[in-house]
Image (cartoon, rainbow, N blue to C red; front, side, top):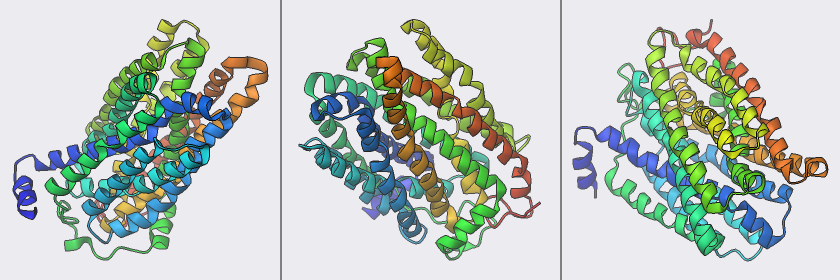
Length: 438
């Protein structure tokens, strides 16, 4: 097995292959996580649940375990074999997704979803760390952009497979259909990807990158770096908005525009999967290109994207004609994931080698507790509150209110840019040691 991995790792372009496999892992996690968006309505109807209850199922129930376990697993990843941790993680979440298909009650489904969350907690931080050991700071945004495409690929598959399979075979078979492929990806990762040497890409780094610091040291360091503080707050708001939209948008199209699950799957696959994928990759590449002129562009790119698409998103929820709504939604679809690659590329560049997985997990913890935990939940609560005045259009109004939080998100990315030059100084090469302070 090690011989096969060594031969593959010696092939030119191997590092992009490794990113491709990690992207497939990320896509699998997104399919298994976001498939709930396509299945909310049939599950709600069968189990007789309210929007608030369904918001709890897809939000806080998942987020608490996903975000909390991410940090201890990341600390382990900063000290041990990251590839093997990811292999174990994908095996767990794929198996538990299959189990979701056999749930007979709301409680059983919630417990199975907790199992999915436990598995998915071990994937992203180690992946960020591996990518940062394969690519230097000048290419890290592009590499992270490719990896971040896993979100859009996963959503595309979740919408297409979830829409067609759930309409024709039911929501239980859908869980089984999306869970099994993850086990194949786990085998590909284990047999073909090699654990990279920490810090090998960073020419100024001491071999091995030193000892991994304690959690308190990493958390304290991240709090002291002003740009990291604002990046984390901005990413959390972006996640709050994003999860609220992703998990409720299929239901919105069914209720307000009368689309079938298959039609919703096709529309959102093209919008979020294809158009959104172009935007996610563009953000990482654009950040790399523009930051060669001014490093602050890594944050400005996100600030401009998040603020710029608010009028289009608000207009999307205010029109009734489906074709016009879809035209307007092209802009939000493109810019929705603009924050992903620049944010995590910056996080990896602002901390030292053996902080990388834990720093990523801390950002993800806050992002997911706030975003995944409360975003869908708030949408469900507001929808129930607005129902007395707006009837079936209560969800439309709830999502419209959520749209304007993008302006708050943009503010934090703009503020992060103000100290970025001071936090990424020439005296401390990005990603090597502690950045100097202004």
